Image 1 (cartoon, one colour):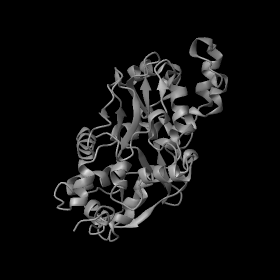
Image 2 (cartoon, one colour; image 1 turned 60 degrees about the vertical axis):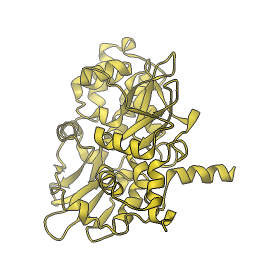
Image 3 (spheres, helix red, strand yellow; image 1 turned 90 degrees about the vertical axis):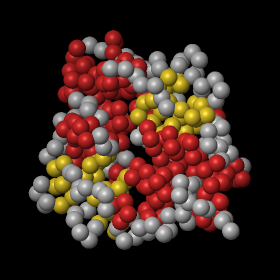
Length: 337
């Protein structure tokens, strides 16, 4: 007979090596690479983090993520005049030159390693370990881990890799408990937050949007690395602002952060893309299928008025198949109150 244990122990029979064997050896940047150069590489390779090799010691000195770089850029003192709502048309030419001169873009990438809490740690696993152990870290918000391998060099495994692996295995599961999860809707599984969803308006600047995102960037409260962009008049979701939208940033584009979000997105992509959404009644299975097939990191849960009421992310997929679950955390918070 299938039980809830079949769900949270679903990954016990798999090893990390089943994902690691498909991964290439580490790509890295060296310690003399600039922040701007690193952003260009992240954009070119469509990745969110990269190890940094110290050229003097020939040892890895850490992993820098787009989160570290975004924090270093948008909270840099060069934007001090804009902390109280200033905008581009109030800046003098001298102000603009000072913003560019004092930015971190020309600094060594080493300067921004560990700016975020996750960046201060390096989670390492061996390929022989159980995948469930790695998945539990991913479920709690860790985005990547270094994997050691017997043959070949080390590699990085991300939340995306783990979620894709789960997606490939759950369809073949004969467990009735797993099927129950797959058939449950997002509302019943705790992915609807209602008014607790943190948003940014389409009339706000990209700088304010990134700052709001990172001010809420804690494992307990909001660990999505993105915010839904909403219409300032109707509250309907019209876009998505994520940390990855800063990849490719350079000195020529730095002042674009002072544009309102739709304009900022157009300078980078030519258009502000339509956000991918699901409803409160969407099943877990359908949400997973949509997220994996679209190759994105999250879907926004919307109500009948197309207003965001929750989110469904890669870590949500993983957490359902480990002892740790964000929805369980919410239940505990309600019980405490």
